[in-house]
Length: 148
Image (tube, rainbow, N blue to C red; front, side, top):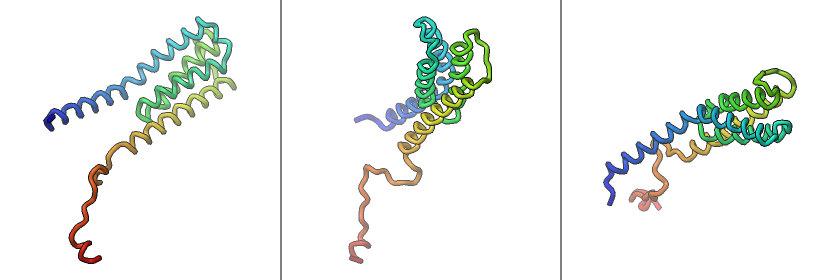
């Protein structure tokens, strides 16, 4: 039978690992976006903007789903910077034209939707304070038997 102390330490390490993952998503999204730009340039899919935007939207959704909701706009911003600078304008230049605004809106909405749904799932899985655990049945008291 496992000791309660060992179970508490493993739960604490799981929480620390989850916090580490939440904190590392932004730097990892930088690396993933740079890798995605290289992949799109090498495979010559750079000229197909909708395909490239879809690839960056998937990256933004995956990264924003792994982090806290407040970091989702930053993840979308990182993806937009790489998409706009290296896919749309080819030389690392940023602009603010129609394509740039539309791609920013798409990436931001995808990241916020993914981050918001992931935050909702995490909030629903978290046990509430003061609530009885669902795994234990509620026992009826003798007072309810006497009144019936």
